[in-house]
Length: 197
Image 1 (cartoon, rainbow, N blue to C red):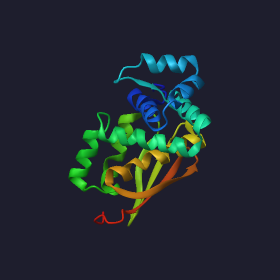
Image 2: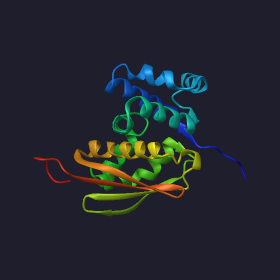
Image 3: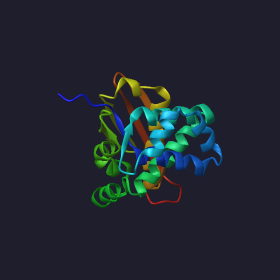
Image 4: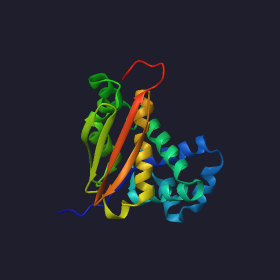
């Protein structure tokens, strides 16, 4: 059996740094200065189609957290995934899900496992565990131990909030770490004055 290591699409990590620069001008240089030289080199050398070790993405998240705190890390992760869902990384998949299942978090998440697999390799499995009115529970299983870091899981919860933006609803995601993974709870409600979703 081949021994594989967790990887993240380089485009995703680069989009995180672009989102950081847009949301907090000047912070990207401070965050990059916190990264080790091998991480900076990996980011610079990677093409849009490459995958990087997932620990590179974790180091970027850790540097953002150290520089700006937990809430801004969540906002950056949210903006990064929002850009991914409307851009070349996941845009076609998101539009297909919306066309087939509707512009709702449960509809968009019908393709959640495919989207996660497109961004992450050997980083466990993400699937919808349960849905109810205004709530989707996601189960992340077989998540690598080296990535099982609270701030990283919080960043993932923040990223899932991008689904709310794409679906044009309000809400919040929360995370409960579990052994070799986590449960994410994405709660939402229609925006005031908007038609119910």
